[in-house]
Structure formats: structure tokens, C-alpha cells
Length: 355
Image (cartoon, rainbow, N blue to C red; front, side, top):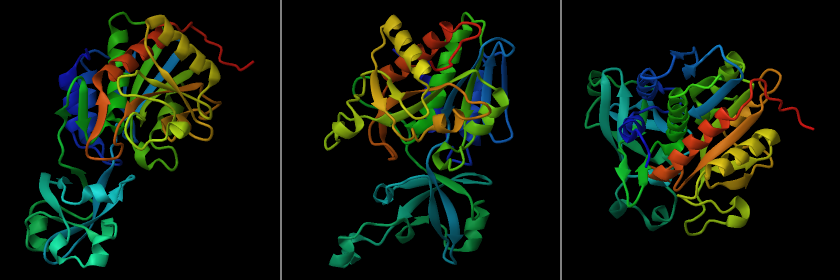
């Protein structure tokens, strides 16, 4: 069973859309300080927790802590908020949702509004709702009332959806992509701390991955830490639901263990070592092809400085980029165990030169 479930719940429920990760990052660092040798934040907002920071080899374990969200673009004279997306949304899932605005005075509740179905013409009913057709209602009736609530243009929002336990070991949350990656790397560091290895190990909760057109926080994080090897933890598509083409994405099931990516940003020798560690620990896993890019922090890390041998460990996730993403707690536990096993098997100066 997964350890530290209370921490996971606090982390997933904390708001932290891309560019505004501070509340979630604060929860992560507070937990890290209970066992890490050093904890700090860099100028981009990345949070770093270290064990044996002067050791060898230098290992970076990265999971991004940001989630997709929304941002206020305009407040009209009647107090309605208009907004744009932070990250990739299916706008259909936004209709009728509750939100929390991260205002300067704290969290402000609101609801996403749309013209009622009774007033839609038939041709309108057949159209997809777009973000520009929606608005947020705080209950205010003027711009002045909105200002009194501490809400301004540029404030971020998240959907007001707390974590829920489903049957078995499954949970649903709006922030699984990819706050569970930040959770897994910190849990791996916690396990390593019980008998610290000679390696310098850095768990990094990176920022802005969901909008990382230039690499997000992972790139400067890797540049400053100078790792000799890096492991990235993210989510991938669980293909055990209706209407998913396994021929395109592979066969990855919730509860089936972590998914190891091959190709593009994934160094082949790191992948082999991950598979060896998984087999030695009896951890089930599946393989996923990444012929062009992984669309994760691995893409940002593997070419930093002189190149960083990088591996990607993913957790199967249902309903990605929705208010109710679903994962297995057992898969989080297996992913953390795999990272721990990989690090413990490293020699002082590992050679990742392809031959």
C-alpha cells in the first residue's frame, strides 16, 4: 500500500497552475524538509530537495508540479470574468464547473457560466462550446465588487475539484498530471534517505511543463544541478478504457505498473538499467515508443549542457486533462520503488556512452 497518502492528498488538492505553482510547491517543500538534507527554490520556481549533495554520481529525479488551469483576461462592468486556458483543455469539460480564483486576498469561489440549453437555437446546440463562449460568475455585480474580492486581470484559476477515493486503490483528481510525478520523486528520495546512498540525489518539482514551449523549469533546473543521469516521472495514457487504439499507444493499464519510454529523449542505457532494476525488484512494467518526442520534461533535460542521459518513467492515467484524472495508488508506489532501485544500483562514475 502507498505510504504517505495524507501528503499526496494535500499536494493534489493544493492549487498550482503553470506559472502560479507557489501554493502546491510550498506543500511539497514542507514535506521534503522532514527528511531531505537540503531544500531550496530556484529563481524559476523549481523546488529542489537533496540527499548527500556533494556525493557521486549526481542524479536528478524530476516531476512537474504544475497543473493546467485558467487565467482571467477581462472583468466586464457587470462583474463577469472572461478567461483563457493555461495549458491544453477540452473546453467541453469546463461547462458548469466550479472554480477557485487565486486572488490577492486568497481563494475566491466562482462558477463557469453558459447560456442555458433552453435558450440555445438548434444549430447552437450542435456546436462545440468554446472557451470564448464561457464566463465565470463570482456572484459580484460590478467591477468594483470584483476588485473588493481581490480579483484582478491575470489571476489564475483552478477547477474546484478535490481528490476522491474510488474503488480499490484508485483515486481521481484534477491535478494528477503531473503532481503525482512530483510526489513520486519525493517519495523515492524519502525511501533513499532511510539509508542514504553515496550518490548526490536531487528530487525536483519542476514548473511550467504544461506550457513548456522552451523547456519550462526543467531546463534551468538541469543546467544548475549538472546531473550525470536524470529520471523524469510523468503520466501517460492508460489504454484500458473504451475507444483507445492500442496499435497507436500500446497496452498500458491502471495497476499494471510504470511505463518505460523508449526513443527520442530516452537514453538507451538508462532504459536498460531501468528494466534491469524493475526485474530485480519484481516490479511489472510496460514499454512505450517515443519516436519523436516524449512531450515531458525529458525533452528539456536530455540535451542540457553536454547532454544528460535521461529516462522517462510514466504512470498510466485515465481521462488526462480533465477534472477527474484517475490513477492507481499501487502504480505510484511501484514507480517510487523503481526510482529507488535504479539509484541504489548506480556505481560512483557510471558510463552512459553509447557503444
